[in-house]
Length: 143
Image 1 (cartoon, helix red, strand yellow):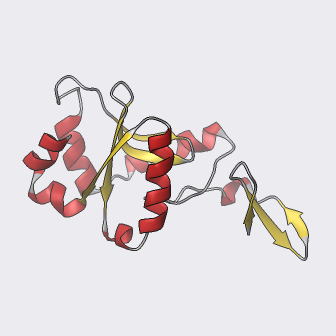
Image 2 (tube, one colour; image 1 turned 180 degrees about the vertical axis):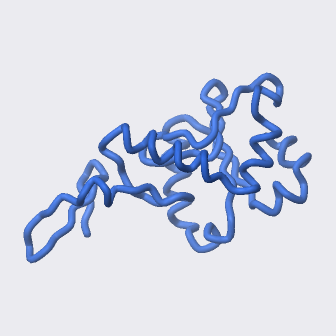
């Protein structure tokens, strides 16, 4: 598999460039570098992630929803470029990412993701799931 300059994927089979099926274009949660070319897919993936949120995401969402932190409005599972941010405040340009065990392995893809989001003007705050569950007050203080 190769990538075009715009980040979209090419699959080479017997030297022939093939475009992957639209059903093959998925976003890997937690830093996968896969690009959507169709905005509807972005929204569908974000909607599915909201419906299937983790216990940690639900716990943090309960604390930050409805502008609960100094009047700052957060949205959850929002597409931003080729990624879906766990929580984002568009007015303050803050992204909150919750990391489970898979992020200990995906350090490079998280760095690529964070770099992209910083280039777009966002400040990225990352917390381990256990930090959120064991020290919610500390996490909210940082946010």
